[in-house]
Amino acid sequence: QVQLAESGGGLVQAGGSLRLSCVASGTTFSRYSLGWFRQAPGKEREFVAAISRSGGTTYVATTVKGRFSISRDNAKNTVYLQMNSLKPEDTAVYYCAARPGAQAVNFVGTYDYWGQGTQVTVSS
Image (cartoon, rainbow, N blue to C red):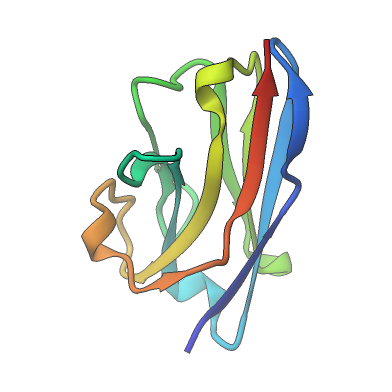
């Protein structure tokens, strides 16, 4: 069983930056590939970024490419989402997720474990 806990959300002005963190417990962290997803009010949960088990491969949605990046520290059981040049349309609850397997994957249905989410609000 994997427990995930996100942190680092908050209110930021457009153009600003935030770094989200997600700490995993209850498992061998390095066995899992990881992803970040987000969900705005009235919308479906959407893919943001994913990282492979080793950290050697990352995959970022086109909507955030060039602004967001994902990384992981297996020694700290933590995955990060660095968000720069934030826009009001980035406002959402951000979730981290884990799946057994090596590859970075963008499909929400393949992830078995989810955190509780952290709110990110970008003001214009």
